[in-house]
Image (cartoon, rainbow, N blue to C red; front, side, top):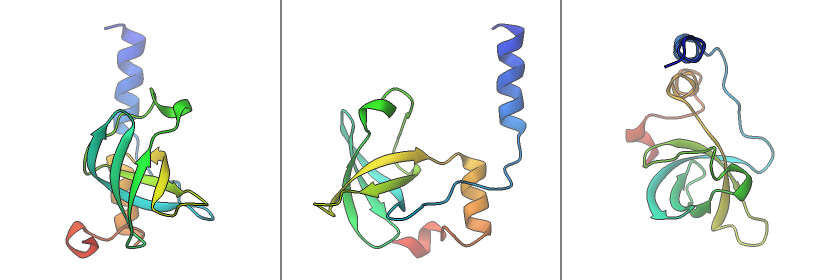
Length: 110
């Protein structure tokens, strides 16, 4: 592996997140429950709803998602049971959300 590339990845791993992006307006935090294939998945949102979500085309190759990942969802205007995945939280951002009360522990969510 190239020395520049290796040092860049090491710096990213050692960063301490003091803040994570929060949902705005209609956006909701959710946890991926199941992948259906392609860009579709079932997400349990913190507002108590279960949504069928998809990854928009512009993010399809940038977001690599798996079950139990924490994401930000934007529900559709016409059909509130569907939505788009906008962002995936990293592990240190999830810890920040838990510490500051934005994300409850897994036992309390479901």
